Amino acid sequence: MQVHSMEFKARAGQKLADQRLQQSLRKLSTKFVAGRAEAIQAIDFEATRAALKERRNRALENLDVWLTTFEEAATKRGATVLYAETTADAAKLVADIALKHGVKKVIKSKSMVTEEMRLNQVLGEMGVQSIETDLGEYILQINDSEPPSHIIAPVIHKDKDEIADLFARVHNKPRLTDVSEMTREARGVLRPEFLSADMGVTGGNFVIAETGSVAVVTNEGNEGMCTIMPRVHVAVTGIEKVLPTLEDLSTVMRLLPRSATGQAISNYFSLLTGPRAEGEQDGPEHMYFVLVDGGRSGLIGGEFQEMLRCIRCGACMNHCPVYQKIGGHAYGWVYPGPMGSVLTPSYVGLANAIDLPQAATLCGECNRVCPASIPLSDLLRKLREKQMERGLRPWQERFALQAWGYVAKRPALYAFATRIGARFLSRLGGRSRLIGSLPMAGKGWTETRDMPAPSGRTFRELYKERRARA
Image (cartoon, rainbow, N blue to C red; front, side, top):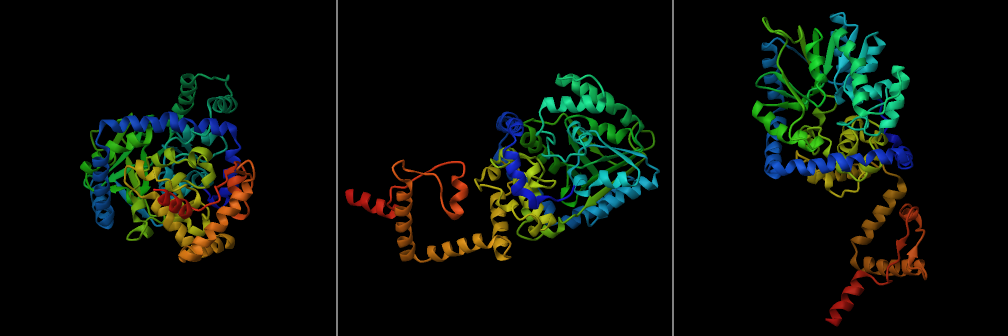
């Protein structure tokens, strides 16, 4: 997936004006936000996420050790473990596996890392057909390979009528509007692909060091068809997704489905270890793990290491007031919302995602719901500081903040400036006591709303007057 994060402002404006999208995004509150709030009532959320944080930190602080342990365990069970420094390297490794085994058709379950790798495009260029089997990803693929807009619900930006029109056009069948019938139609189209594919590619929610296993969590069961039917299975995931033990995995699984979709447990949970052994009735003949760095190791030991605790549940974007209004495509890369506003600059470079650290109100709602206790608003603030240090923000913005800092450090000057400002704004409000247009940087605030005019007196003056009366 190409990076379009530099287009954030233009894209955000387009999405705000898209009324159909605004209607679709309401599903975030009615489904995911409300569902999560109810689901976490069954557990001690704070204690469980404290345990998750401790376990994820333990893995990250000794990442090299646990990766080595995982490789040894997976190799012992007949799998092949490969490492990729870049996403391009990872795509080439998967392509080489396909070439080695004479693969003509690949079926995939949902994987955000393969979106980073642009895997479908790489396989297509070498003549290998790659078919998405997650229903949401399949819808996007047949719609001119549209990128996902959400890491859990990739097609949340579309409504039922849009999908009905798409199915009728692509499947060349009568238009259906009943969700169950539409799902059955998609299943009928995909079933022959499952039966004829040579290789299955899945993501990996986590890999387990002590057993050499990969955990894959879905709600559709397509991951089972992707890993049992083809003769080759390739599991692709980031190097940060290693967990030391199955006990660590059980802790994560108490929070992942609850935070993602409001479920106590996902419909399908697969723990896959090695290729099919002698005497076993199903499973692949060959199993590979491709563990991707793609910028992750650069966060180890730094001030953004906490971001690597992310379990990709999507709770931060579901609750983010910015994401709720513009959706995921405005962010311009694989990961949207607050987590994407930290990850994208970290992976593709701060200069290539100049507006993403600003794409948040810093209300802290993402911090409150994150099951891994990642201080997202603090990390976004750090990125903003780095932008200022490197001169990456517009000069007008840097000048305004420097001027503000100069005045704020001098109490007498600050008191004088605020008195002048309060009186100026009071006069600007006129008889209506509403300011319809602010000058300079304040213009954006009053383009779509009126600002109530202040009384003309500063807080200090009002406080002093109140104390005098008391």
